[in-house]
Amino acid sequence: MDLCKQAQLLWHDYILLRTPEALGRAMAQLADDCVIIGTGKHEFYLSRAGMEQALARELTTTEAKTFTIVDEWYQALPLDAQTVLVYGGVWVRDAELGRPALVDMDSRFSLLYCLQDGAWKVRHVHQSMPYREQAPGEYYPRTLTEQVRMARQEADRMTRLARTDPVTGLYNHRAFFEEAERLLAQGPVCFMVLDLDDFKQINDTCGHMKGDEVLACTGKVLRAATRSVDVVGRIGGDEFAVLCPRVEKEGTALSIARRILRQVNAQAGAPAGCTVRLSIGIIVAQLSRQKSKIFIMN
Image (tube, rainbow, N blue to C red; front, top):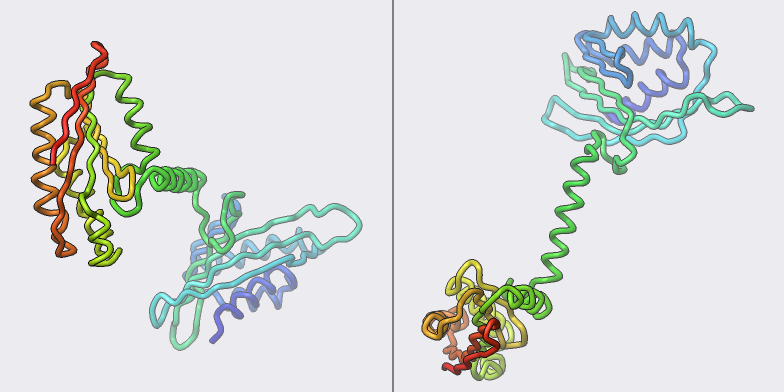
């Protein structure tokens, strides 16, 4: 059975025809214990009988009114062999011509159909007015708070992408030097520039995919070999940089550099089956005394 068509007939009988016969057909689709939740606070019924009584009272005041359906859509979602959720939207307007519409309601609905004794019956009806922020096709709208949260998450994601090197996951050139400028203004730092020796040969002999594996592994090793407060970035094709705040002693800088050399040389080429050698240039900047110490290691 086409339950979307059945749902459409239900709404057409209820909205467009509104005769006792048409409403009787609509109510015949409901199970005896159907729960109905409408758009108003008072529209809540725990059985078909309760809904039928309310309709009988309503007919005395709305008998002369006519409505038109401006737009409608229906979607079926089978939940199991005996249960199908039909949801959609119905946009209704007052059909009386010659004056502005008194009724203009673009509502959303969900009907839960269950198979009972070989016949499909509606066990639950829910109709609601959508939020203005509700997206097309949503049968239950997201709250504005949820949409704001999702928008912020997407904005954060795009910001991270704009500041991240896609191969290594480290800061890219621009983001690294933005962070460096911020930290340089706060006190002494150790600045390291790292170069993968003869990296072009890896690309030429092993291929660029293997080269990217070496770069990605180098980034991972650098992140593991440095402190959480250190800033690590890829600033060129085979060039990396590390900024270590609050490091002003030569011995501390050399210790960090030796650890990086040892770990990168031992691990970075492993995924691609290559041998990797790293060179490091080190500057210890003591801004308060306006002097720097420079070292080269490989």
